[in-house]
Length: 206
Image (tube, rainbow, N blue to C red; front, side, top):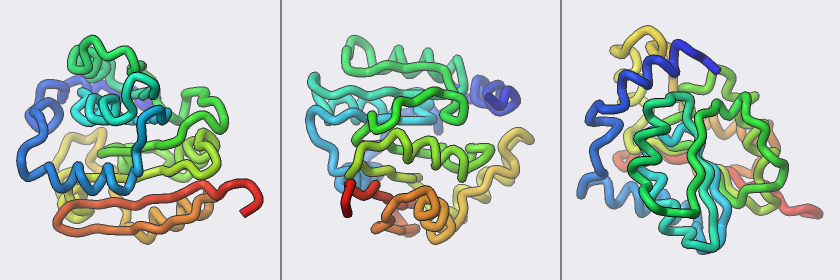
């Protein structure tokens, strides 16, 4: 785990960008994410980089009591904030862990959503390979931001040293990383609603 980044995000757990509820202008962005996710009741969802859980509760409600969300974050403070936010929901588990270090069971998740976390992977190709192994055949992996890449990268350039060089690559570059990891990529968008790349793990025999 990158301790410098973990400490930085500990200091950000009460920042407005991390803790404020989604606003009205976020609704179409959330709607597009859920459309791309094709989320259904009963699904098992992995959310690396869950932060304070702004999206976690939405995912938990979408999969319902028969589904399960595993939310991970490297920041202990953000993990606690996420636990506080999800409240009494019993279909969510929140753990402090980096996906690069976490032992994920193969073929165990129908959906993986990397929301606002991809630039912070120290080794994106290695992280994606781990995530792809965790997907069930036919499962989907989404890389999502609610702002476009130039906006994200400019924000990071002005941030503290631990994340100053964390870059969100152009969608086609992420497409290549996901394709090299074994996914079929069918959605690459970077526009006014933000950034979204979707990869699907092929079913066996296809």
